[in-house]
Image (tube, rainbow, N blue to C red; front, side):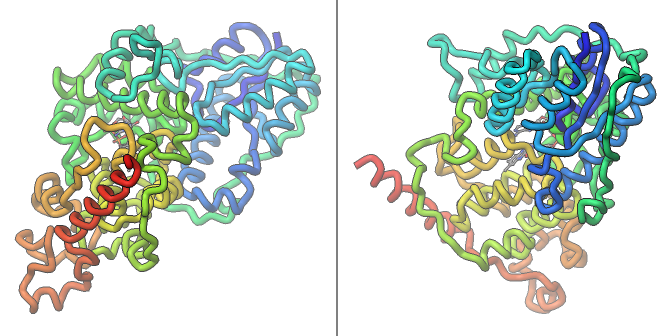
Length: 469
Ligand SMILES: Cc1cc2nc3c(=O)[nH]c(=O)nc-3n(C[C@H](O)[C@H](O)[C@H](O)COP(=O)(O)OP(=O)(O)OC[C@H]3O[C@@H](n4cnc5c(N)ncnc54)[C@H](O)[C@@H]3O)c2cc1C
């Protein structure tokens, strides 16, 4: 059996990789990665600079790992829908194996690939692994997808029977010598016209494993408390690894399930189930990437306000926690979950700007930018997603900051202009005495919390009332 193993950017590892292990067990293995212009054309790559940097590092490490096992990563350029069937024909492959993608455009790509391959008599086999359970497999008593997280998590938890992580591969067969393998080198980040950002996490399996071990060795024990503290390294920081598959989600689940203590472990596994939920939601309702989950929010009268948008993206709204989130995003390609929630709520509720703009901005700059999780996070924050809480919950950026960054260390880390601001005023610098304010190069709030709150509530009530008439 000759198998093409198609690595597709969400499974950049050799450990616990179903398609690779299965192909190796059955015969010849041809590992490929396609530089599809959809992502790798320089203009496209420049729209996702942080993800591209992480991906290229991970790809280079994957190339080294495969070489270490005796194989070779075959990198080719072109549209996947054309290249994969062409290679399968040229190399006389019996089948192509890969991990399933949940996103609608990935599903469409696979539909087209399978169509062409099957015309040529080549099988296309998709493996589960992006999620813990196959998307679409967790249903309620009526056979429908859950619309709320808690019953979904209960049902998913009851169905989980993951089995052990696969044993590491010892070797792989080299690509058959007789084949013409005109492949190209992995591009550098500079080749794509990008400037490397030294503030990002390092890609690749080794760094991912080190992050997992560091988390299991300490923070997992305090996760229940520290996960919300923006000023503490209390979370796993594995989101980009789960996004690019430098760790399998099963590896993370099994490792966490076997460590930590009661409540902290339960909370952590609960977060992995939130990830699961977002993927199952997008599988069930692919148009979530365009439309609100709650249809009554369709046509919501979002404002357009270029100055407010610029202030939010540049971190100059005058609300320190919101601005720290904006700066962390650009500097690290990451934002603490609590800060994401506050910043997203501020954009959509205080500024009344369309959540889809915020979603696209995060998708551009986050290293962990994931269509399912990002969309769910933004819809949840805007009040139009699936959430047990009512849409009219509005985060107060000052009380959030006081509670989850009490000494202002998170804020000060990202806003050097507030370095000399005493803790008393760090969450509300506009209340500082005039002489101190004059020394801080920091703007006044662009909206007043109470007024912005009233404006959002009035707008939303008006819109929802019109819809129910
Ligand atoms: C507006 C907004 C946008 C978001 N966009 C993304 C995104 O593009 N990609 C992304 O991975 N997460 C996103 N999240 C969820 C969450 O903020 C990140 O997963 C988390 O901050 C990553 O840090 P961590 O790995 O240290 O998380 P940990 O707290 O260590 O959690 C472990 C893992 O669980 C998953 N997870 C944790 N919280 C959530 C959550 N609320 N929803 C879904 N999965 C979760 C992640 O895969 C994470 O790596 C978003 C949240 C919001 C509010």
